Every structure is written in structure tokens, then in C-alpha cells.
Amino acid sequence: MTRTTLSKRALSRRSFNATLGAAASLPLLGRKAFAFESADVIVVGAGLAGLNAALNLESEGYSVIVLEAADYVGGRTRTFDFPAGPTNAGGQTIGPYYARVRDLADRLGVPLMSPPGRIAMGNYVRGELVSSADWPNAKVNKTVGAERNVQPGAMEFFYLSNNNPLPDVESWTEAEQAHLDVSIARYMINKGASEEALRLASITMNVFSLSTGSALSYLRDIKRLQWGIANTNNQNTRATYGASTEDDGFEFSEVVGGTQRLCEAMAGALKGEVRLNQPVRSISMTGDDVEVKTVDGSRFQSKYVVSAVPFSVLRNIEVFPHFEGRQKDAIRQSAHGNTVRVFMEPTEPFWEDDIGEAGLYTDTAIERVFARSNEEGEIIGMDCWVNGNAAFRLDQLPSESVGEFVVDSMARIRPASKGKLKVIKVHSWAKHSASGCCRHVFEAGQVGEWADVMAKPHDRLHLAGEQTRSIENGMEAAAKSGERAAFEIMERFG
View 1 (spheres, rainbow, N blue to C red):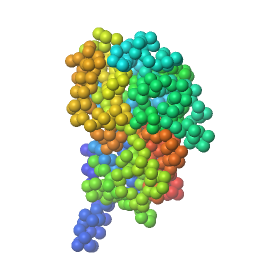
View 2: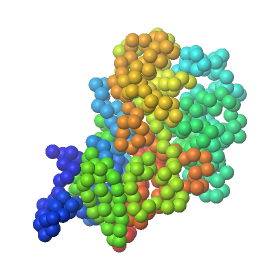
View 3: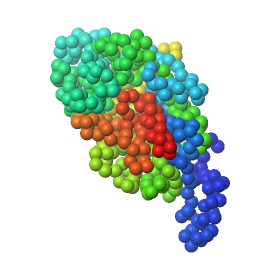
View 4: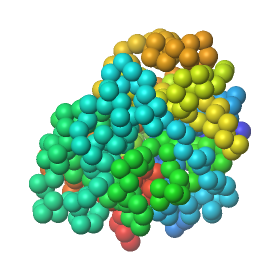
């Protein structure tokens, strides 16, 4: 039995004997009332943030218990093993400045590789299938001026990466930048964006709406991505799934076998086991102790606890003392976006019969379809990727119906694909995961209201996870947040 699949009620011999003795002295109360495990720190969530917090704490001699609601480790770094090879549903790439993630991979012997090159993406806009080469002069291209030379899938970066007004990424929470905490739509309009540019950008941005998402938050993420990268004013730069090359200035890596392998290696390096299938019900902090109860009635005690789950999960855990003020509002009200992924296998290279480009940006309900290749450059998979509100709309359908809908939609807008796409799996982060979301989203005005309290410790509870990030992006943000929470607790132990 592996460490990550250890029985969720496994007790050490010492704690078991102590429990048995206490129960024997008070037989009328029953043995189960005293059945608990204890550690210096309990970590809730076995994603990158939680696992890195646990590793840092154990390295300094503290005992740790990690509780995970799902039946696997990795959180939102999920890898599915398909016939064509391992495929990531989250946590795709390791950026050039992901120092912590790269160090973890190196120390744990997890091999990295360069991702396949960019796969061309055509367009289906206003009812017409158009190649990327034909897009600038296409009749259905209703953008204006310089926008006309921008591919629809790159419109957001054209307006938010060119001439990014943030002087540096660290300044995003300073009062001087508060004027940028407006909606993405307002920011783009102020930059001269046409209505059609806004419409096209709304497909690729993982926010609920351009009219609500915070421009400041997006500018922060892009500014961090731009550190040390040449050619940042390339109007067709796409920092998206499988779309990064050295020519762009974006040098990414991927984990051999899928990103989840890194998290599994992290879990395997822990002295204690990760307790799977253990959704937390309550966290009670009284005096110098913390008691954590899981849904099945298991009890755990510690001196401190790390919450490394999204606020969409934390808000459903009973925490005492209760959160208060702005921190309570942030946890209870913050927005969390969703992504629906429909993984497909092409049985024939149908794209050779129309525009010659396997990937497709669309202004339809299926939004974007990415193509995935192997090391030889052969296209082995396709991945429909739907964000934000469009993803929540698809969630109203049964999963099998979502797959059918995507394939049928492809056959309608791209007839050459009819009968040549096979659905492998449908995955919704909101519907099919313990996380209940794919990422935290700042709405306009919320950066100034909440950014300074989202990572603030609450009594003996320390907060980690990508929603508490400051300047880092993606997996590096998660890893850093776990490290930060661990260091905060170490300081309190003294």
C-alpha cells in the first residue's frame, strides 16, 4: 500500500495506545469519543500549496498530517492517462521563473521536458471558417485599425500586455495603481478597443465577464509573465495551453508523464501519509490547540493548521472563531472561475481538408479547441477549453451530453471533422473536483478591498493557495504560498 492510499483512519501505535487507555478510564463515554490523531500542524489540501507547506514543515522537524478531500493528490494539477499519453487538465506548464517548482522537481528526481511547439490555430467567427493567414483581410474580421492584424485568440494580450502601465509587478497593490482596479472592459475601451475586440477577447479571458473582471489583477499576472522576456509587444503572443516557444521569448517546461507526477513525488517524500477521501467539516481553535473534524467523524489535533484549499472550499468549512470583517467578506464573496475541458481523439487529420490548422478559436459556445502533439509533431489529441460563465452554462448538461455537444458543434462549424472526433473524457473543475473551481478571480474593485487580508493568518489558521498569491503566477504561486504559510508557523513555534 502506498503512502497516499493509506487508510484514512490509520493511527500510530503510540496514539492508539493512548486513546485506548483514556477510553478505558471512562467507559461510559465510549472509545470513539477520544479517537484522534495529533501532529504539530494539520494541512488541509494536498495540492502544490499544501504539499509544499508540509514538506517545508517536516524539513524543520515538525510533524504534519495532510488531509485531502479527493481520492488523489495534486489538487488542480490533475493528469489523466489517456491511450495517446498523459494529459494535464490543470497545471500544464512550468514557467521560466518557477524557481520553487523547478527546485522541487530537481530535488525529487522528477524529470522535465520542453513542451511541443506551437500548433497553428484557425478561427471560426461570425459563421465563417478562416485560417490565421487569411484573418487580417477576412470579411468577418470586424475589428478596426491595428486590431485587424491581431488573431482573435491574442486580442487580450494585445491590449493588456502592450504598454503595461504597472512599473513593476510588486506595485500592483500600491495606492498609485488603484485607478487600474476597474473592469477589463473599461480598461480596454480606454486603450481604444473596439466593440468587436471586446467581444473576441471575452472568449479567451477566464473571468465571468469583461465588465466585472479586474484589469489590475490581469495586468499583475501579465507583468510577472513579462519579466525578462523579449518581444513582449508581439501582437499575436498567446500565453496559453501549448502555445509557448523560444521564439516568443516564453520558455516553458513540462513534467514528464504529467504534472500530477510532481505532486505524487512530493506526497511520497513526506514522513507522514496523505489522508485521502477526508473532506474537512470543521476547524475549531481554542487556547493553544486546534481540532479538525472531517465529514466521516475523524478527529485530528494540532497546534496550527494550514488551509491550502480555494476559498470556494474554505467557505463550506465551519471555522471557529469565525472570520471577521474584510477577510470574512473575501472568503465568503470572492469569485472563482471554472473551466470545462473536453478531451478528444481525432481519428483522421480532418484539418487537412479545410483550413489546414488543427486548433480553432470560435465565437460559439465551445469557445476554443486546442490541438496536442507528440514529440514527433504528430497531432494526437484535441482539447475543447471553455472558460468562465460559458463553462458554468455547460455544467447544466450531463457530462456525456457535454461531450456530444462539443463534437456536434464541431461537425456543424467545421464539417470536415464530422465523424472524425472521439470523446475521451469530459472534466469540469467546478463539477468534478473537490476544488469546486479552477482559479480565483478578482472582480473590479476587489484588489484594493481584499488583497491585503487574503493571506493574513486567522488565529491559528494560516492561509495558502493560489488565491493568496502576491506576485507569482500559476503553480509557482501555489508553491510559494505553501512555503510562506509554513514559515509563518515556524516563526510562531519559535
